[in-house]
Amino acid sequence: SPFGWDSKFTQQELPACKPILTPKWVISVFLLVGVIFVPIGVASLLASNKVVEIVDRYDDACVPSNVTNKLAYIQNSTISKTCRRTLKVPKDMKQPIFVYYQLNNFYQNHRRYVKSRNDQQLRDASKANETTLCDPEKTRDGMAIVPCGLIAWSTFNDTYTFQHNTNNLSIDKTDISWKSDRDHKFGSDVFPKNFQKGPLIGGKTLNESIPLSEQEDLIVWMRTAALPTFRKLYGRIYVDLKENDTITVTLDNNYNTYSFDGKKSLVLSTSTWLGGKNDFLGLAYLTVGGLCFFLAFAFTLLYLIKPRKLGDNNYLSWNRNSAGH
Image (cartoon, one colour):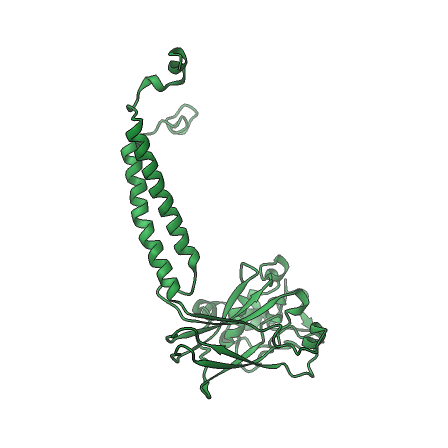
């Protein structure tokens, strides 16, 4: 048979390309990779350096100095959590300016947390009572919670408003989520129901007259992050900002990060053709390209100083031993 134990396939005797890696070929390949990777790395770093970012951590700064128990403070709904922050623009920022919130030490990738949702319920109004896997936020007073699960329950609920030179800056919150999520994962006929009705409020409350497909803050939050430090898009500002301009931020410090020693930051950022600020990609290309150049140089020196004839039998171990080498 063509696949028997003695076939060419089984015995690995099929025709194959077996390139001979001569020194010239190896050196040429390393040089080629270096020539390609180093310019890409330089271009990536230059693009990353053009991104202007303002990062303002406010979780500690927005707690009054006389408060000793931050957890009790954030859980007390009768206390106003409004806070004002002043930001200075370090360089000119061209629109659109992306507004993010950043959380540290929040493990959205925890197995129990990631599983605590029901995609059928989010997508289909006829599955509103389907709360499988949504523990512990499944039902309230015998009625299903829509959307159910820990992810929806813990949606980020800090809010931001901006003033620039006494003028209010409007935040465009449309299209901040993935279009595929809006179209296929969250139903246009599914409305919040019985949500955040328990004694412990986890995060943002949802407008019950707006379908889930239009609740973009929820959709952004429910695309869980892989790492404990992450940013999520809050909106966009379509105004150019000049260097040394002052921005006044009025925020509601509602979200509880104090129970798990988390951190909260507001991020304003521009973008380039490569996206946001990220030096890692450029440094990685430069490192690999530089290493290839080094190896090409080292192999060239070795080839010139101590050349070796291709297929020389004298370098076989038994021939070297017999020659007394």
